[in-house]
Length: 88
Image (cartoon, rainbow, N blue to C red; front, side, top):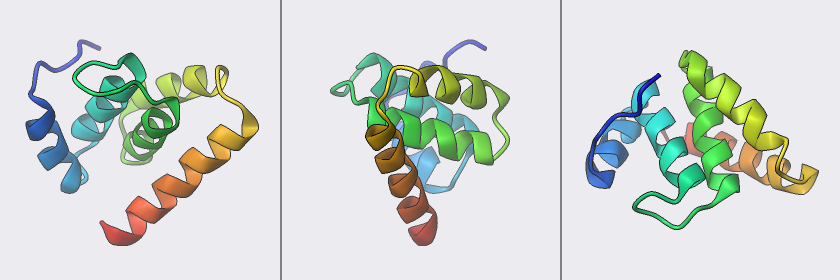
C-alpha cells in the first residue's frame, strides 16, 4: 500500500475522527521519523488503532514493529491505544 502524501496536521485531524487510513499514516510517521521524532511505542499505538478499525496494512506493520520492541514497550503502546479509545 502506498503511503499517503499528507501534512502531519491533516493526518492528525483525520486521526481525531478515527479514520483508519489516517491512523495508519500516523503510525508510518512515527515508525519512520518522517516530520516527527521516531517513536516505536507511539507508532505501534497508531498501527494498533488502525488495524482495529479495519486497515489490513496496519496489522502487518504492527506485528513487524512489535518484533523490534521490548514487551514493556508493547504493553505501553497497548495502554496508550486503550486510553485513546476512551477519549475518541
